[in-house]
Image (tube, rainbow over all chains, first blue to last red; front, top):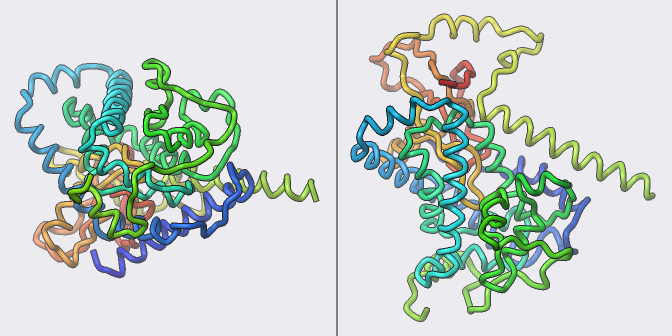
Length: 255
Length: 143
């Protein structure tokens, strides 16, 4: 891919996300906030870093991981899974992924080492769609690895549920946006910004760890949804405000 | 004033729904008349479909990953990742067509390594990929 191609796709993606989320954030703001709020440029660096640098690296790791699993799994196991109806496999993969990412996410909040990386994402003191991109690449590898583990093990062809995956991808950005738009019972099924905003409360163990659907939070008792926005987002520990400082933060000794 | 604001709010929701809907359809490779303006499946797409191999020689579409990350969207191209990490400068890493054809049209001879690489899937957290002039069909690989 040429640099021009990367720049084009990045610009187009940015434009698309602006067109989707800026009007929503203007029309249904969860809290009063300027468009170019503090740390907007830092989050833009995360966005660009993800598109230009880390995306490929994360994919490479996942590919290697998938190949490794392929070589170590007996084919009879895959064959038995493939013998199930397609819809059953799809449900299994989605539910297992949600379960894994739920507990993996809780571990990120409770394990000091994992929190070093995950705290970067939580250091955002202003949430909007761009803040969703504030994520350390190692944190991304961890999350992507976990959520894809069931599909990699079961050998489920995820392209068959590509529409669902695409939607969930956009929704993962949406739940970070500065939007409060009541969607009724759908919230139970696919989650909502008001739920995830509480996850970004300054309290490190505020709940709502589920990736998209709050189902796992319900099951394991971490669902929370007060009828208001949290007072403040972010983390208690000091952290650099700039992109490079946040990238090296997990590797600093003074943790 | 109040009515105007309500209208703008409705427009904001509608535009978001339309854009996201379009993105999801595009990303999933659901075929909607092959993008033909006339409402008919384009001749080019039909030709490509006809030319597509239907035997075991058909290339296997690359795996797609779930987007579990906070911001990663859509599906990803493993082939793209390989190309990127192998330092290839010329080959497109991410598919511009946003689709994963189960039977990718491979009408070009296999001895043309420099031909534009058509990756049958996308993305690494990208909403869009760069333009690729090569035509592809859009089919969803249901087993």
